[in-house]
Length: 160
Image (cartoon, rainbow, N blue to C red; front, top):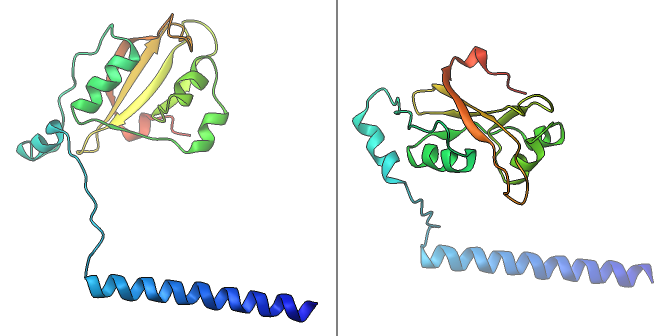
């Protein structure tokens, strides 16, 4: 019985290897390289005009974080993403924001004004901190708003 399964395994591996070799040969005959299409927002295209790479900070005070984030992304700011494990150690509104895919979330307070800090970078390496206050409900009936925006040095980041 052992010999039978051994032969089945060998035959299966030979079939797989043959299929892969055939596929590779077909690709080389067609001479088609994989094409990656990247859509660049208009704001990113304008970065070249500013040789330092420093982006303007859009006016986002008193906006919900969701609207402010969209405005920052449209202006070319890049979320300073955290490791996925960071999402396991969040307080207050943190889990709600993390579950929305906001990996730029640095921390949230579990008490007080329910402050959260989100961080973005621009092509020059400047770091932008966006601080929100207020409760964020999953159903959207209450949304945290931006109450402070500041440029900070890399040393100021409380990156986990």
